[in-house]
Amino acid sequence: MFRVELPTDVAEHLYNAFADLPSPSDTEQRLAQLLASCSILPIEVLRELLFFRASPYASNAILISGLPIDHDLPPTPADGAPEPVKQGGISESAILTIAALLGEPVAYRDEKNGALVQNVYPTRSRKNTPSNESSAASLGFHTELTFSRTAADRPLHCASPDFVLLLGLRCPADRLATTSVVDARKACSCLSERQLAVLRTPQFQLMAPYSFTRTGDGSRPWSSPVALLRGPDDAPSLAFDSACGVKALSAEADDALKALTAACNDPELHETVQLQAGDLLAINNNRAAHSRSSFSAHFDGRDRWLQRVYVRRSIWPLPVESPKSYRILT
Image (tube, rainbow, N blue to C red; front, side, top):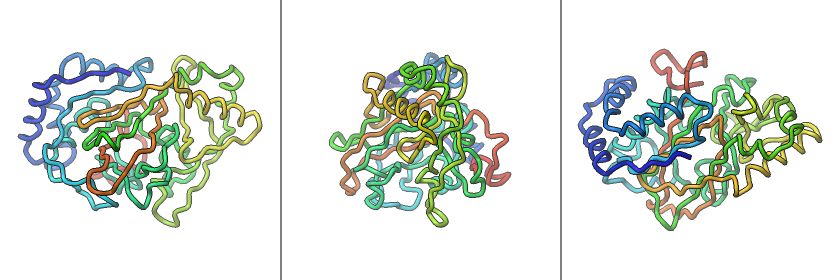
């Protein structure tokens, strides 16, 4: 994991640049404004982000500390507050700037109501679910998968983001969660050649993610048989979700799945962070799986609060909501 701390003067210059931006006419105007401010970032940070975006041999994740966020945050939403949940836009500008450097920021119609910048915080009603709104339950290792009822037969990895960005807004010391990342290459190095070969065959099913299935009848169907491992041996790509559900369809596949799960759960392979306010963690969703520990939530306005943005290298040829809302995928 590449880690960098932004100098204080850089953070201040970014804050002022974001605060001075005129109101955009649309999302593309805002992204254009934000790209114009990228010259404030140190050249070594820009270089690492471009390498991270393009190379299959780059780090599995990047942690950038010291990004500017809004000075006066309102209370953390307690239970499904309507958007927007805050007035300022400094943190949104910060996370979208990094997102635009990595590719195309996208949203999903069935996730967080199609919000491009998603607010992630614990809710009382979902504290034990396999969801980003949970707190009492940990989230096992997974890659971000997507599900659409209008394209129910589409494999869950086909429209998935290439990168997942998480920015800390409020992170009380007594309510911190740990986020752990495991590199697909390291996990695969722990498996036998036969187990790796089996993971490349369609002998597994994935359950539709919890957060994508709240509409309609709320059912969470299993996918058609899929492989969990793709790509070249020296740069493998994973697509699985032990938090939401994955099952093997043969004894041999079950052995391979258990071996993969054990490798991901090996603490020796983990890179773990506790996101603080202003910390941005960018994860390569193809080259790494990630997990989140359980944490204490009091639902009193002081709980952990992150923002999240999904990024794809390309939107085409996925179905979009409309010509005017082409960053919202369906």
